[in-house]
Length: 151
Ligand code: CMP
Image 1 (spheres, rainbow, N blue to C red):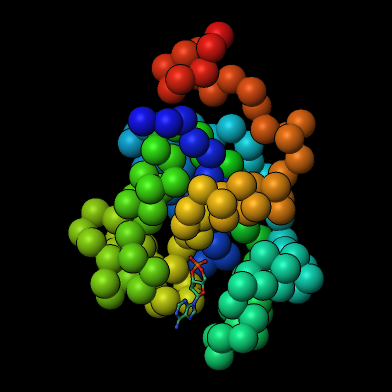
Image 2: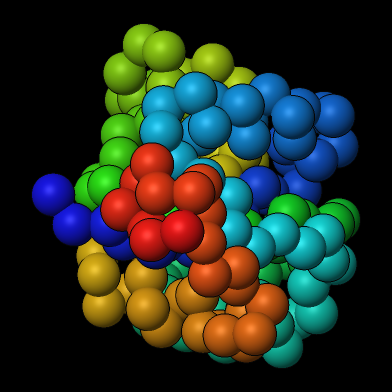
């Protein structure tokens, strides 16, 4: 399996609930490594650009309003099969459909306030990581060789 990087966002509802650590711990305990991290309050422009693929959807304005309602935590996660693994840990977008033991099932209130975002494919992961992080902000070695990097 390939070592991948993916973008993860801890959304305003999760930051407000003070569960940043619980969320990061789920990623870490399932083999993903945080290789970049920043807390930020997104501007409308940041959120509109990030979610541009949804701009024609009926929920777009609400999504932008929600994502700018409070600080978020932006992270790059690295590990084997990181893109699919992150999505498995998050669960389905709609918490009512999310499997037991997933972040959204355990912590999300609604399809909008759904705790986390994660890239859905290798191409979106590379676009989304670059949207928020410069290469120089991402550490080069995650774990001394345990997840495929050379120390
Ligand atoms: P996310 O994985 O961040 O990607 C787009 C977001 O739009 C999604 O999570 C949801 O939080 C939000 N959203 C709001 N309403 C809907 C909807 N009806 N269908 C899909 N996504 C929605």
